[in-house]
Image (cartoon, rainbow, N blue to C red; front, top):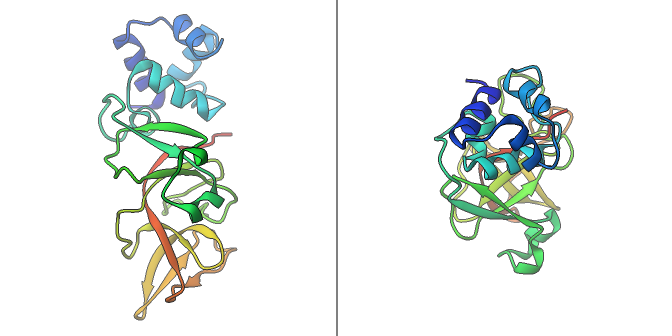
Length: 202
């Protein structure tokens, strides 16, 4: 099932017309909603609108966008913070830009970050990819293990894949233009990525 088909299913279940949904989303037209539902447009131009649509239709944003999990109501919210605030964890009210809904079961200490740069954008189709603008949910209560995607710091907080080679651990970028970093006793971990909440689409 495509995003458009899921959107149509959720809209009909909510007993809304395409025009009503478009208006609720800030003035989109019925034809714009129709284009997404038919697959003419693959998604909303602004990823924030997709999250807003999930709230209006009362479905999981991860299900709506990716078809993962159940089309259940949003049960958790996590605070979106800036990268510089990772160093000040746990999250304080003054750090929170906004709260984001998710159905992922996470600890109360979890937080969300918006990806900056392209160091975790995979160059092949075989890897998970984290393009600039994507939002990840991070749980600091989960112990990092090999092959987890983690928020860690040697010099500054970064998102990397934790890999193990020849008895040593490394922070591995998915973009080969960036270098991996050796995990040392000075490396600090700030949590494990539990989900990709949303993605920036061109």
